Figure 1 (tube, rainbow, N blue to C red):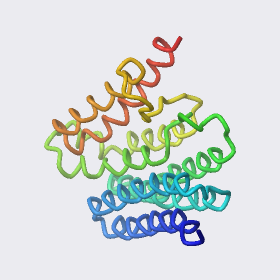
Figure 2 (cartoon, rainbow, N blue to C red):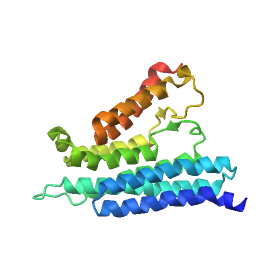
Figure 3 (tube, one colour):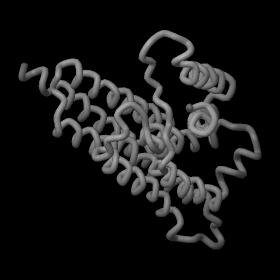
Length: 236
């Protein structure tokens, strides 16, 4: 029983370890490896809760560890990535020295969301505001889109310091916005009760197939838009 008690916490610490490695890769400007380690950390983040429920050992320690690990993997790493994007977007002739550091507003917004999530009893089956892992994937996909996209429009957007600053501010806002987002959990196998989830997963698969790295931010945007449409028009 003692071993089972610690398995979820060990998985959570492995999530934190992945986040630490991702920070190192961002520092080395290896955004692909940073992205993959964040993905691995998010994967582990899902399974720590799964095993805590399976072994019936969920507790306050696990809850706090989970948020602290997410703070690095889904908070610090995307903030650091945005710092780099803003730094690279600077005009060498007239740089705004403080501007790149504003990328860490994403980290601050993530921290606030994680702390609020722990005390918000409304978010047991769905989310209010964008979850930090989804936001992290959105931000970390941007340097990969910049690297692999041949579109000059995409290049102009992701190298414009003011557009990047807007993305930063919007990221911090959407993390903490009072916008209910539908759950991705499929509780039964009837289409009627899971139509929204099935539509979203199908669209996500198509976006990733056709747009590759660009599909990642498009998937996150689609998730938010479908949630807003669901809240306004589909919910009874």
